[in-house]
Amino acid sequence: MAQVPAFKLNDGNSMPQVGLGVWQVPNGEASAAVKEALAAGYRSVDTAAIYGNEEGVGAGLRAARVARKDLFVTTKLWNDRHGYDDAQKAMDESLRKLGLAYVDLYLIHWPVAGSDRYLDAWRAMVAMKEDGRARSIGVSNFTQAQLQRLIDETGVVPAVNQVELHPGFAQRELRAFHAEHGIATESWSPLGQGSSLQHPVIAGIAGRHGKTAAQVVLRWHLQNGLIVIPKSVTPERIRANIDVFDFELSAEDIAAIDGIPEGKRLGPDPDAFKG
Image (cartoon, helix red, strand yellow):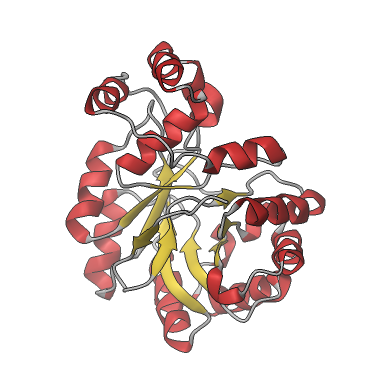
């Protein structure tokens, strides 16, 4: 069973560097995927209220019978719950569906274009951290400007910013800002929704290492100090996505992947997305 390294967050807590993402996993399939992942050595699971599968995730966590202290569970606040009181209620709803007393990481899912109510949501999340319902708090899909405003107006730096990030969209400027402020970068769609796997540079590196293209891309994330949450419901792929600790990319490999031209976002633009 794979041993996943821990990533130290700015609040002193640690989270596994590889986790299971369950975006677009139906509630009825989430339990089996989570149970399979935990059997393979995963200890981190990333869900969200809007995914509609928190209950399935919770069922999978219970079925796997892994001690709660050894799990790292993330969920997210959706865009229509950014008021202070609404955010508090949303957290309680998520905890009820998950069957948990607390989550290890609670994220604001999107900043919501044209609104600054994420500031109220963030203040609510600070209170959740203080009362123990969230061990760590962070954001998702925030730009540098939005992060700076959050920090300036509340004085609390997010532990994590979870953003679209893959070799075709490497987010270098945002990652530099994160590093400057001690914010962990977590990659969603780390495989570029499959687009990265077709690139000849990555295919060539995979062939030299005797690994799959997906394993090479995930290894690129890890060696760049990123946290990854690849999504799959297929047992073989779930196991393969965590089987990335028995090889290392060379400096030349990393440079070659870094040299892939920056493409376009695959997901929504945070400056335009309202949800």
